[in-house]
Length: 113
Length: 507
Image 1 (cartoon, helix red, strand yellow):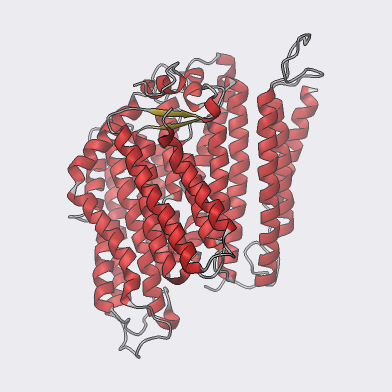
Image 2 (image 1 turned 90 degrees about the vertical axis):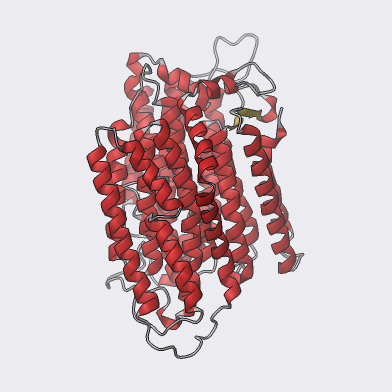
């Protein structure tokens, strides 16, 4: 299971990094989303992988899952959700104002400042 | 428990929420006054907090009364209180400028301004690594809104870059915090200090990776080479009061580097001792050199200020990298000076741009400005401050950093880079100053929409505060020296946070 989880995190992060480096806003937003998925799984794994263990105290539990990473992931999910919503709105605004979806706002011509 | 520690976080949060609720119900003038009152209260609270910690007390506030390291703590020592006060003072003058008209574009400016202060104060006060991440996100989300305030294609493009860069930074922060938690099993910064010092050698590689990743995140916030590219354009594209307030945002990164450097990496016995040493000083010097070259090459005034910010950040991080009591003390003094001077410069730059008609802030020949005498005087003072010439606070700070660097092995490099970049900054400022003020073509009358003299008042007042830093340099450096001493003996901090003393007043 450790190998599977770590391969999963690695693939998600690699795809996220690749997409973030693209020149159009939509792949960049997708990349940020994949990166946040990757990091959420990673945070989960920092509490060590356990199966079928309770996170809260119970009398007949043989062991416990670490509850703190679960709380961290919850916080991280909420924040990345809000940030994704924001960056999508910003990309749409940039598309409307700059006339194209290139991250620098100019499709072909040189930047004129 | 001393509730004063919580107030710098609580006041802007409540004020921001209130301003958000009444954004349609109350007229703009009333909301402006509410905002101003809230910032004045924050200045008073920050002053009270600073007075309580000047004797070396470390105030600890356990949120929800959960004992550390299980709950989240807010910690106020000399450094945190100093940063909180600096933020509040800068915010006061930025707001005084903003309420003269540049806040009128959107109903959300006032609440976002307060939420930005909420994030900044929280980041300076928190003693928990994940809580630091949350406050970073709060201040960044508010800064995204403020950066885009007023609209315009230029601003949107710079905003998009800023947002994406910082979102990637946030992801890295989570990776770093997760790695450190996975190794040490705690996120409390004081507890981490103990755990990271006595690591199992098998975990050492992971811990070093996590700590260096964290350094990358802080370097991104502090705009250290090679992560500085976002800063000049983002700061140049936004409105003046926001750019002035952002002057303290890079200092969050500097603060975080200083905090973890003294808390985790300074103990010579610890397993992570000296982790940042090979990186911090060279990167700081490269940042300085590139910043001064950028300032020389800029064609727009506010881009130039952005590069001069990089020069000052390089000097600050050089002071931290030296790690001596005197260098850190000089750095903390210089930090206050550069934050206020940069804020004043951004406010002045918009005053200049609005008086030059279509030329704006571009460094080209243009008709003479109205009020050129007053603007020239202010520009001259701010240029002296930023370039670090005598007799003002910039010179004092730079001189003290150099004096602390004299007996270190890297002395030659530091002296060469600091003095050369100072010279380049003077050349750059002399060029833009003569272009803006001396080589102006005869005036064609007042450009439409040129503001009155009153608009220069906040920038002048900020410069007066810088003058105050110069006049009271002796007591202030005494304070920063005590701060540096406290930082270099982190046992007080750690004992105060983890101690059983419920009053949290342990020393």
